[in-house]
Length: 381
Image (cartoon, rainbow, N blue to C red; front, side, top):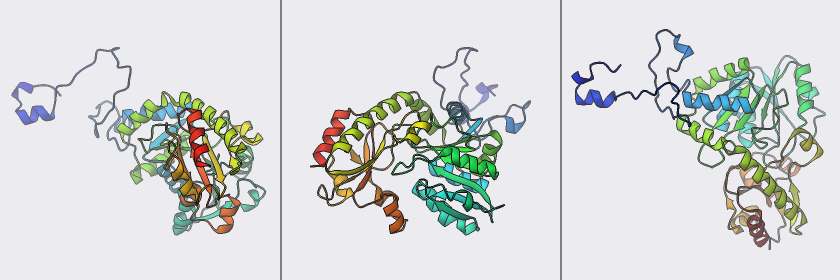
């Protein structure tokens, strides 16, 4: 590749710079970012057993996939351009016309909307149940047609906890695949369960710094291959700069998660004792403790109408905690749950899910607990 450089003109030399070779064993401690969209193939290796084109595979994104597969205790993992891409790519890969999917109303809104409103365009039917009542799960299965059960735990925004063992037991009995969105719990949790497809938004705890949009899908090699093929056709690839930032963010993942959880528990205690807070939701039930090592940093609660004109108005009264979407980042953010997550639901569904004009979802960051509590206390007066 580098021969006869002395014979090249300036434009040629600029577009084919001198290759810097690293002595064997003289590796960088931090994996470099491979920004190249294309690669020169080794003639002795089959094309698709090496890096060729970054939309298909890239050394930086591949390192992230291997890291994520390892910490989730899964055979394989694929990273994509967003958490929504991970969800929709999974659904499109595993379902076809005539199939049926079971999901739950307590799900991330884009997931719920895609299953209900978009898959139906391809004659893929769906049934939505409640996570708090699985008595109808088995009876909702359509023999020969139900191919997937999809759920989220803890759920967004009010942190319902799924009985994962029960869902898996029913699914296995009928030969149905199970996909789970575990974003709110974090990447290190629920690894003990035989979930076929584990989905996470890496935008949240994975990256943790609020500057990357990404998602991942982990599971058995054969299932992830099927999903990868679909995602590649959809052009859902994650670019290497984003993969690098997530890989860097993962270095402090457990430090951040532990601190955020400890702070969240202090805030939960404060909110539960405050006379202007009507209810508090935090995943500390017996079922949650049985399934999760850590309870996370997300809290939902409802303020009394005497505090503010609306949930939106209450969020704007806060000075340190900012009104914003997402969660799991270093800064604390809050959002009105009805406006952000429930406008596609019926009034009955909103009521059953505690999505009211005064309910909010708080994601706790890395600030000191005392400062966050003082901010909440001032806004609650």
